Image 1: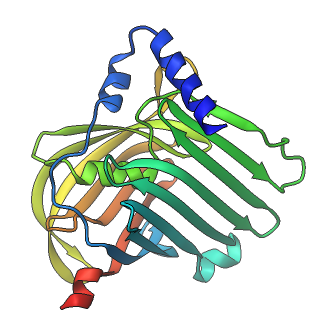
Image 2 (image 1 turned 180 degrees about the vertical axis):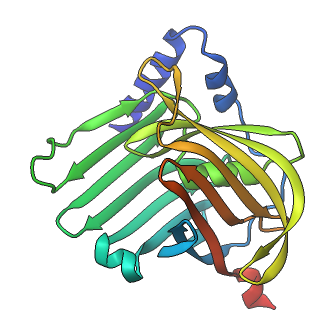
Image 3 (image 1 turned 90 degrees about the vertical axis):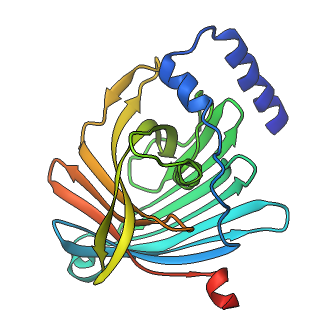
Length: 268
């Protein structure tokens, strides 16, 4: 089944003729030469809006003996936010170390009255997605195809970006499928600076980013709810996001690193 689908995607790509510039840029972005990650990383983040913490999550990334990495996230709302909007979520993805291509992923979101379950299979010419909801009146689930070469899930896109030189003035085009729909994220490297992260001064690489929705005809439309975004990445051998701020129509939301433990720490 997978081989037939891969062949179909490839054939479609050969018959499509010239690609729009952004599609070529996303397709041709290859991993850089930045040193590899430690074999195991465990991190904890908090999330919120307008400075108020509302959720938290644990992220793990581990390398298998065959060069395949497994990423996992487990989290949900907390505190007052949980009494207003209960959400528990899990995410699992497998990635190929050779080119940081996403292989497959599964995301489950559990709300108070319903559950969303989405599976994705990443192929040479795009991605197939199955999204099922237990919400009353939800549409019957079916496989949906998205034909964009070089598309990755969020973890694959972050690891691909991490491997780049990240020099001031660089722009990194990433075709991303976070679930449900496809987007083009352009990351603009701005400068290196110091930031305060949970009371500790850290060396960081600051980057801004914009997000466009990829329409069915492959034109780009600015994301309706997104206004601007900034990310600070640790300027060290790990290069993990320290803080992310996104301005949206209701204010701004943020994510901030609380703790990190790597296999290198365990070896010390």
